[in-house]
Structure formats: C-alpha cells, structure tokens
Amino acid sequence: MKKLLLLSLTFFLTFGCRTSNFTEIEKRYIIANKGNKKFYLIDIIKKNQQNGMLDSIPMLIIDGKPYTYNIKDVHEEINISKRSIKKVEIMDKEKSIPIYGKAGRNGLMLIYTY
Image 1 (cartoon, one colour):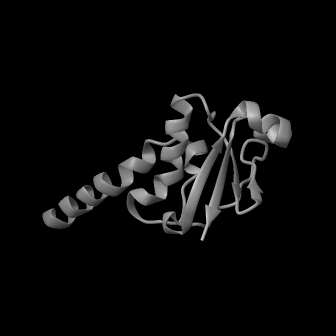
Image 2 (cartoon, one colour; image 1 turned 45 degrees about the horizontal axis):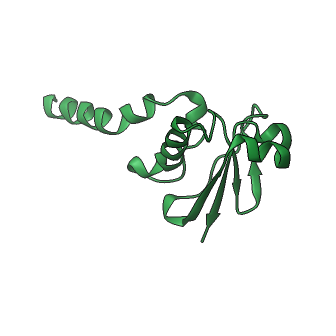
C-alpha cells in the first residue's frame, strides 16, 4: 500500500503540477499530446508575452481556420499535436488589429500543419 501511495504521489507531482501552474485561459491552448509537448503553444505564448508581441489570449489561426479565444466564452479544443505543427508565426497586436479587428487585439498566432 505504501508503494502504491508513493507511486501515485510521484506520478501526480511529475505530471499533474505543470498543468496546475497555468491559468484557465492558458489551459485553452493545450494541444493533443502527452507530457510537456502538450504545453508547446502555451510556452510560445509566454515567451512572446515577455517581448510584448502577444497578450494573454491571442487569436489562433490554424491552417486558415480562426480560433478566436478572446471574444468567445466557449472554445473549441485544439485538435493538433506538436508533431503535426510545421511552422508558427507570430503577428503582434499592432499588425493584427487592422486585419482582424477586435479579434486580433491580443496578437495572433498563425499555425501551419503538415
């Protein structure tokens, strides 16, 4: 029983804590992978928030389909994996607002898949 409890605790600390470090908004950007690869888009967002390119809820366009998380309460699951991502381009707030209007006010991530 002790071993099972220790194993369960180790599993939770290894795999459960990383998700708990994210806000509910950031969790929207989890992709269909296991392990740390599922946080790939969140890591890109955080990096680009530091340099001022993106705000907390950037719009995603995946292969031409918009996912506008900043103007909808309900969101669709991002059904891609890191392995299927060919390229990610970041469009900052100033450039995305004239093109996408209110939906682009937090910046934009253009994602191209294989």
